[in-house]
Structures are given as structure tokens and as C-alpha cells.
Length: 290
Image (tube, one colour):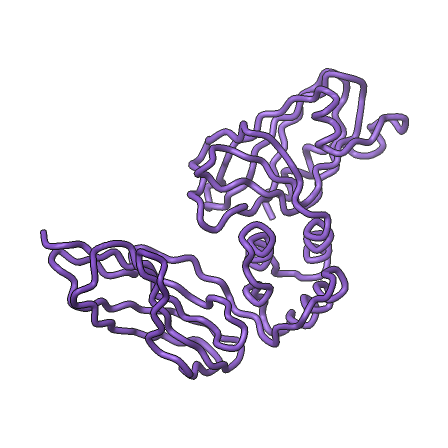
């Protein structure tokens, strides 16, 4: 809410902007010679956002920074994807400082540190995603985490079933997706995608004999699952099949026998058996003899 208020006071009221001023999309403005500086920022409360300094070298203009616009930094850093439209008036020769809500454009890349510049270009994700973001902002009151899940559907090929909203908002989400996504199929449930947390894995000082992992899962409905171990060479080992997980918050602890397995990075995943998407995952790093 604080960021929305800041953007409101930075954008001049319509009565102060000349009605004859051109209207440009950000990418079009950049093609016409506008310059920008984008950096990763965060509030005192820990909310991350994008600070944008936008300079207009030409005549007065309105610029639309569309939801779905992606700012790129180094290859190993998550792109910053704008999640809400912002229309701003910039007078001739002026520089405006803007604060943009954002999501991460890659689930697997590293997050940006505060103050890191995005200097490797700007582009836009598919128009379909831009439309869905606009509607989610208008129609779903608590969509921040769902918007992040949705961005990963388009940047990381996550399943639409990974987009989690509270039960009372699921119908509205499915209505948006069914009207905006060609051939959309209702997955029948929504689960919250959880990023692996290294602190939840097990660390070994000697040869690994077994590993114990804990999954925290909030299931919106009961379903049959499998537990899979991904090995360093990419091979999948099914540990449990037809594993029933009931609706609601659950805490599962799995112990795996790993005697004779080579050192390396393993991942244990809880997957939906019917739809094949990952519900939760935990990284396990196995060390050899110390």
C-alpha cells in the first residue's frame, strides 16, 4: 500500500499534463531515445520493488509501463517483472523517479541484492500474461503471491495448478484463466509452489547413510501424490507412490536410506500423481567422507 501511495504522488494529476502530449509504451519510448536506470530496492518492511529513473529527451509525453514488462540484469540474477500498470507524465527534458511493484522472472536464478542495477535491456512477456496480470490486480484482492506464481508459469513452465489463491478466490482466478488462456484446462485444484530452502535439508559430515527431510504443505484438497528423489545425474527415483495427502496444512518428515549413493546435490520432491506438478521440494547436499 505504501508503494501505491508513493506512485500516486509522483504521477502528476491529469489536469496538469497537456492534453496534446504523446502517449507511448515504455519500449517505444526507449526506441525513441529515452534513457532509464533501474535498480533493485526494498522498503524498511522488506517489500521488494524496482526503482526506475526515466529521462525524456524529447517533447512532453505520457508513458505506460505495462504489467509484464521485464528488466534484465546479469545472467545469473532473476529479471524484475513489473506486475502493475503505471501511466506517468514526463515533461520535456525531465527525469522522473518511479517505484514499481515487481515479481521475479526466474524461480531458479538468484535474487538481486539491494541497489543492483538492471542494465541488460528491457522487453515484455507475452501479451496473454499482461492481460491476466491486469485482471488479477482488479479482481483478486489478495493476489500478490499468486501473481508471482503466475509469472513463473510463463518464465519457468510451471503448471497453472501452482498458482495458489485462497479458496474463496479460486473461482475468480479460474474464470480469468479460462477466458484469457487458449485451451485452458481446469486442473481441479490449486497448490502453492514452494521454493526449496537449503536450511531445511540435511547436511552430512561423513558418508551419507540416510537423509531426513521435512515438507510443509498447505493442500487445498485431498489428492494422491508421489515422493521422488532427483539424483545428481538427473535420474528420478520414485520413493513412494499412491501417497494420499488430505486437505489442509500438513507436516511430513521423510527418511531416505542413501547408503552407497555418491556425494552431490539431490532434490526430494512431493508431486501430484494426477497432474504431475511439484507441490513441494527440498534440496539435500550429500558430502563424502570428511
